Image (cartoon, rainbow, N blue to C red; front, top):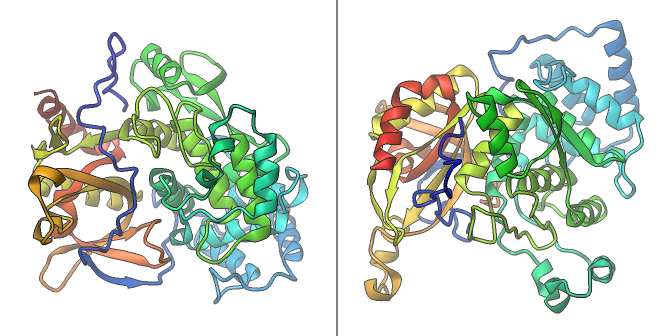
Length: 465
């Protein structure tokens, strides 16, 4: 639930303005990873009914897709499975026939629509289908690494910009080296992993001629008070088309730069770069979360809540996550951060943080969390050139990152290991972090509200203190 907004006064982001959008550091720079392994992620949310038998109509759709993809070679992202094998896997693990929480369509329905209806100019349905299947089978292949824009496409894009657009005077800003889409990419991973029908519905809508997707949002997924929920939608400038005191219909669309990026990745994709699907989903999430200010060409945003020109803050990420899942999501902020951005304490014990994560995984969902590094935890304080007067105190937060926890287990010593997807580590493998390393660094994480209700009020008191 989004409850940190004070509707009668400016929003206080003292504990939320962490520069977690600067993902220039390597998550493994302090060697926290125990190992990496190329695993397929598991079945869909175990709270959903798993269906694996095709109806007669569904058989026709399935066979049509097989025919569309019959000449497609194996994807670099799925070298062990051709498209027909991917479809079979998705059928067997329940993802293909799972239903969306917004319009009751199945993953198969939306794949079929992508194959049989006209796509936006410049987008190729086969590329869209293969990229979608790759991510449904292996959500860990989602990446936030931008591809380059060839000179001819760059010239065309620049020519279309208004004469006073600052990009015209700084074309190098189109070369995005360090992406700020980690929160959006983490939401993408969660959608492909646990909400496959909604994920595919977004791709179908965003790649259609209209290039948008409609969300039928239960207002109580945003806030228990419907009037406050509507005020929050207005405050975050989501594109609300219609609704009542129970639901709101919100249109999610793309910025002009996203179209350029999507076209580029359709024709000029290189291994390790974002796929066309990554571009569409991340761009739409960024635009929705940033009060419609996101520019996909430069990976920058404006808006009322984030002074950093990149990324989404915790409030914005929680808002988007609640809309997509259409259920009440509570984001717990665990760190106490002072005005100088120094980590000075915790709002919750590490044992409770661990339980929040494991309870959510056990319930059948993933956990999207933001962690931060200080000068000390990043190893800077041990460097010969470290100067506290220049670099800040040992506990000064220097940057942070969003990742998705998709599983956990206990090692031989009984210690918890979290299995995660990191979209910015230049590797498609799952990465595993020990609880000892990860838990103290977690600034915030989002959970189904009912799972953390008992601890939420106490944490909010600590934040307000």
